[in-house]
Image 1 (spheres, rainbow, N blue to C red):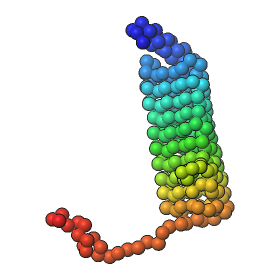
Image 2: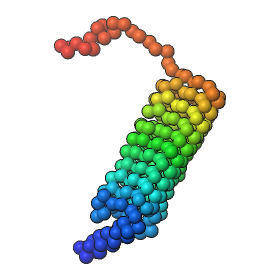
Image 3: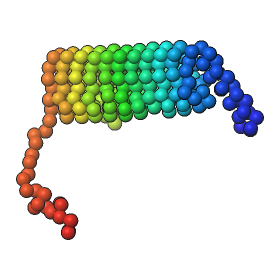
Image 4: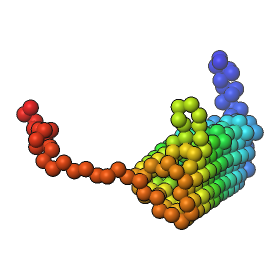
Length: 232
């Protein structure tokens, strides 16, 4: 690209951003937003610096699109916050919080009043209204119901090395931290999974599922092995 082409492209981009501003979109820095032609942005939405909106993107009213966010071919509802995250070929409902550092891969659909928190990855999955995953979770090839809570470190283990499988977590279930769901499994409505569990079979509605190895304590092991002896 020569200098003339670069300047023409910069001018066209700024003109597009100014047109959005005239329609009620608010920019923190209008020169550092990268928005494709044809993108739809609702009134009173705030666009932070270094936001990239590519392809067929629709963003509702009163949203906040935080710095370093990239959205491609996706739909965002009203009054939703997205912070430093990537959303590709997916949808997010109203009044949902995404990020920072979340990753929504293609065919992911998150409802309204949800939370997809920091370092949460969603792939080919659904989350019903009110579902929350606050941090450090992988939701792959799964259907998560309404008002489900996924604790820190939950992993949907969807791949056995040959095939991928799908799991379901029904409405109002609670999945404790550091749990693994070995797909395909179904976690029933209003059921609880204890932290640290590995789920290998279906959980009935209203049940408590706990699966942990029996603890073993070997007293005096550190002294006998000299693990903390710095002189060795």
